[in-house]
Image 1: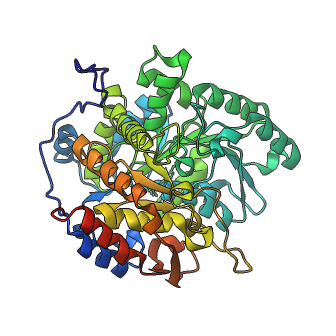
Image 2: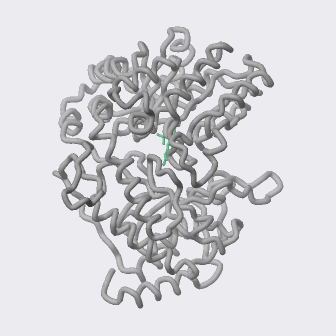
Image 3: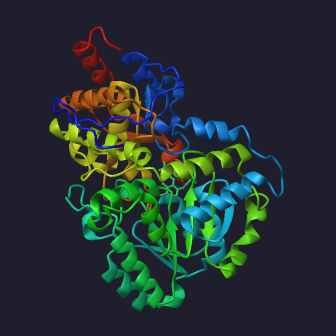
Length: 482
Ligand code: F0G
């Protein structure tokens, strides 16, 4: 997204693409939305997409593809073994990340499973800037432990730190000395740190982390699923990188790593995933797990069409115009919401706009899931589907008590190149309306609570008749509008 100034002085992000295939959307009236939310057990995962106007649940597997990606999908070479498509993907990955070997997998968590199976044992400690749900689950499943070492600023909802995803390198060094380098199979660096609001790390910080790893002979693993946003922030926020191309920054970062894995549902605007490996020794540790868990070495559970789309998608990720769209839209949305007093995570990160539910509905106790309630209310107010990222997404403690989350956030993901600015403006408008009526929002309680990953399929109910009152107020304020 080039820097294009408007004569009138208006400061808005300008799309550097045009839309050539569209999908019709449906916006049901508020009364219907209230009923649909109730039927979905106040869980946005359980809504039917036909009832959703703006699907901001995630950026995973729902990014818009380019014409060149669609065209490439038509010439895929379909074969179980030795597919030319796979060779093209392997060559592209080697060109961009500079690593010789590549193992395909069906998505990001599949790479995490392979990595954990190959390197994690009972008692292993894996330092990372911050955990993500799926790698943590695979590490703990095998008796390993995660240590979160993000800098203090990373856990502050509001900060002006440009790289809130940075590692605290002092704590990293201390941890290594405490547990011993032999108990640390690898250090995991997560680009665009998901659970703290899509916050980036700097190239300089990655350099420091990898220098420490080298000193203690510990392997470095980059989760590059959200790399494209992180690249954008390195280029725009890190002084020493202003004049470097995205390709150069990617290569400099990759050169620091032993292994890079990614979900191609995010990186590369397609579906699938894979592990890039520098050494033959590491390749051999993981190679035979691919046919066991994923599929033969030349597809790893992916369709050849998706692999062709990734080849083009990775190339397009090296284009600043392409990767700017997400962060610029997120920045716009966060800024506009803030102008109206709505509390959001700052600075704006990648992935999506993160609303601070802890402050938005501060009258709701954490035990009544304020972020879950706000996500439900946002759907009722505008047909907009976001994702709860708070206590509801935590697992209960072994004694059955709630594990209260450090942050109560609602994530409104910005799938890349999917929404127009007027749709984003609509979302802002409905959230501002909701903020002005926030006293009407009440809490939630479980009626059906699964033991693991309860946020996916759990069913809840409102603790009072607040959804009716909210829908009624909407109808009073917008007598003629959907
Ligand atoms: N790593 C990061 C940083 C992720 O954000 C995700 C997925 C994964 C790994 C796992 O990849 O879904 O392909 O298995 N994040 C999605 C989200 C689910 O909505 O944030 P996957």
